[in-house]
Image 1 (tube, helix red, strand yellow):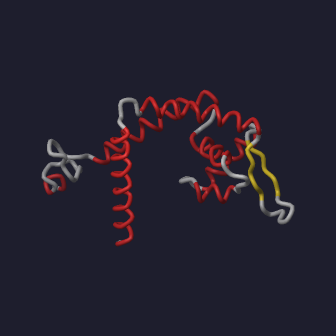
Image 2 (spheres, rainbow, N blue to C red; image 1 turned 90 degrees about the vertical axis):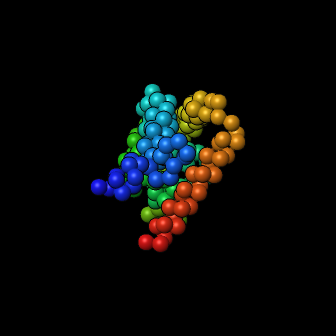
Image 3 (spheres, one colour; image 1 turned 45 degrees about the vertical axis):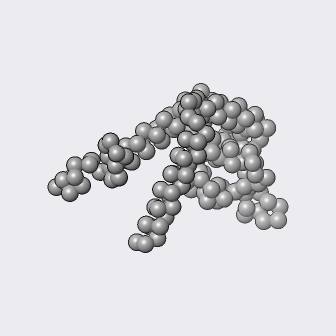
Length: 161
């Protein structure tokens, strides 16, 4: 059996000294805490996480296309297109064709979109602050360094395949 081959460690891999680390379960719980917390802040305004990410991206760029958003955000192009359509219909984003090349459609955040993203960003940051309550700056730095090393190990492993 596979679990016996791992010494009944439940797929956790490395041990912490007391019990095996189940990185998968930990990650799911961690991501859910953040995702659900953010969702609780966005849903009252009828915004989902992809729409929020698009508004944030547009907030800090002069002009962007849907294709550029596709390179920036970890979601497929059709989902970005649907989210942009929703944001345009709510007058939070506007589309503009370039005069120099009418095939290119840029996206701009509207004043209403700026106001909403300002409010949402503040609420999301407050949620993050509550999630980090009692966590020291040293713990955060260690956690980020560990996460960076795990991602680096992943990149190395996938490059070897």
